[in-house]
Length: 265
Length: 239
Image (cartoon, rainbow over all chains, first blue to last red; front, side, top):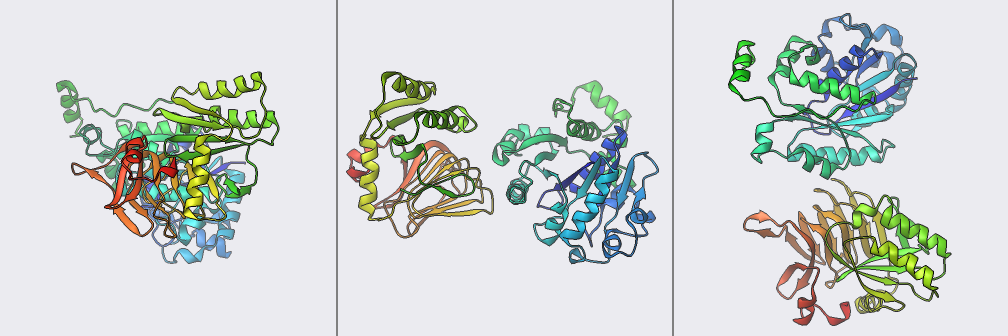
């Protein structure tokens, strides 16, 4: 019997889909059976980030309506042994899926997989309630901006009202330089406001955009600091205690030279 | 006195320990009917258990009222040792019918509320949540930005007040808003609304402050408010 984790944020564009893809891939690389579930019906993105959009035949709405069996809609990611993907529908909207049907689907997936990661849509309306319906745990993603933290706080309040009382926090797109100058909320301040456990801090890095365009999770890029951060998150989910990595980028001459040579500047 | 405790607000007619924010600090009213061990257990839990951290921080005056209970020497020592173990507690009064307790009764008589209620709410008031209380409310936890606490009496926050607080919502202009960390978005007392107080263009962020209505409008002062009493801004019967 596996565990279902919903990845949510309230605000859009903070990195829910990227986090879902990369945590899922990291868990699969660590040998776990993982299923990614895109609950953002009508605005699906997870397939694009995973580079699987051209393999979709059936989707979660087809499963819910009985048009196909669950196994028919699941897409196996050929790059990994243990990773599957259940896509959202692009043509329907959020009302096409009910909380009851969602619970049944997640429950069924939990029989086969160690982890079911649910990519939640932005907002706190019907789609949000459907996405969290089957989840056992929640991860809240925020960025170091006041608006994102405010929305995360609202979402944590809603999760607490829906029996998901101790969500974990991921702070995404941190820039060490801006935090140091006081232009960005720092980690301690965010954790203090939200009052939940910190699961990971992901630096802001352009390798993420490059990977998303290529349709391949950034954790596959061994040089990326973001990859390291997401792999640490996955290990923490499995119960390892991994220290937070230093956010400071090396700024010496040699590191700049090396970065330039590897084409990362 | 009906009292509500817990994150879900359920009435408890006799909580063993009642924490009450008074203007000078904290008043602990120990129930005088319950079993002594139950009282000690509750006190231990409150000051050494999960909520212990909420009472840490700046130095605070503490008043302990044990009511009609007759205590032997060892029991007194047991109770006092719990309070003494909190480094930031300064015990100001210990006994039955303490002045602090009298002060509370007096202030409620003044505001003419027949059935005075006090609510203790443990937990965080998060963005988008609006909690409404009858009578006074003690929030043991934070009020986050975007969160709102409304009470017909006083509001005391043992934590950070960073959201909106509306005291005396039914028109009680004597209501006050007090917080250990005072950084509100907006303050409202009765029908007066005030934006976050600013110092040199930055939002105010101080500790152990409280807001009240003076003749000129909303005023904010340190909780050590003896000066305000002496100068007649606050009525004497608040003590």
